[in-house]
Image (cartoon, rainbow, N blue to C red; front, side):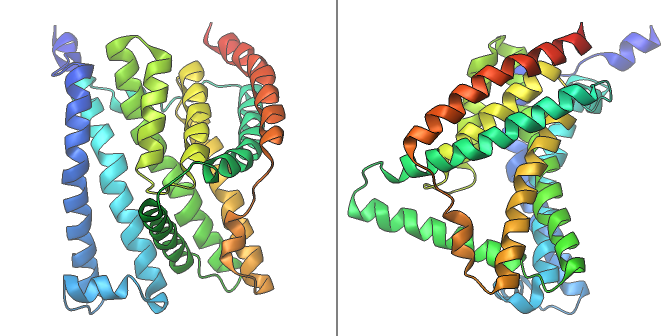
Length: 301
């Protein structure tokens, strides 16, 4: 009887989705508050002073800390809390499990490599979408803001800086974002509706939109769809985390190479391929996915 009481759900998945979205706002306030506290601890004077520091490359250490704390509060804590309301084993509910084969992991990583190639063609397709002059200005402003943030966080002068950048810009976002989007949002939506593809597509649109990048929108949608499929067929959050980390880490290493060579970081966003190349990679992705699915189903059966 005590065990049944301990495992009793306080809410269902539909309620969990609304709570999860609401907690994003709470997390933003919490993360901002903690950042202000940390800023004052290191000698800062308040929020206005902190906002100025967040645009100064001299404060790259604090910029990385602030962004990591903010991501933790927005993307990690809310889904864990919402999952706890649904299940008294929130981490298991999200998918922090260890039962997954090396073969499945390798197939998942291989699919992610193909997806990265597909993203180059989708980036080219994205640029072909017609926009009004006003929307072009707005879209370019978003890209400039995004690249400025990347430039601030990716100040690297040696291997130690590279290691820190990999942890902050590749590993932490992979963990936090996957826990929210796959372990939280997609997971709860699929359990609530029973519709895998609807859950993956809606999650992918949200995942891409929240990055505020028009010219990278289709690429991120494709990335998220593959990550969603990796999660849906393994129910193991580590699979999309590893795949997401690979994607992020490749970007960090590319930025490090550009900095070492003294080249502009804008070249990191210019990996675009012809549309026809995307057709080949899409066919390859669909073809090899069956092997991943067979491997994943073999473990789960």
